[in-house]
Image: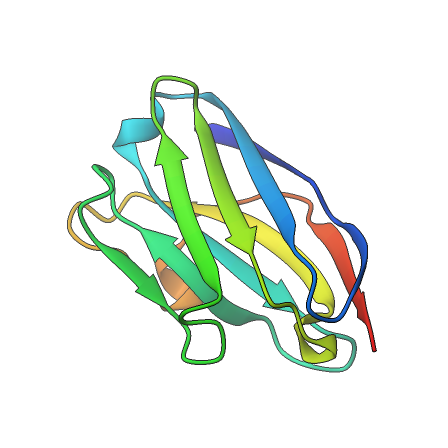
Length: 125
């Protein structure tokens, strides 16, 4: 098993930046592909970004591609999401997740086995 704790959320003006971090404990982080998802009020949870076990593959939602960057440090058991040029529509609770999928960086929610509690990101216009 792996336990995930997100941090770094907050309130930021449109056009600003935030860096979310996900600290993992338990099993070796390199055993997992990692992803970030978000859920806005009244909406379903949606994929944001994912990174494969060795960081060789990354995937991004079209809505964040070019603005967000996912990275990981397996030795430190950390996964980060750098968010730039934030927009009000990025407002949501952001969740870190882990998948035991061996290959690639899955974008489907059902591929993920472990979830953090989430961190709130609010972007004001």
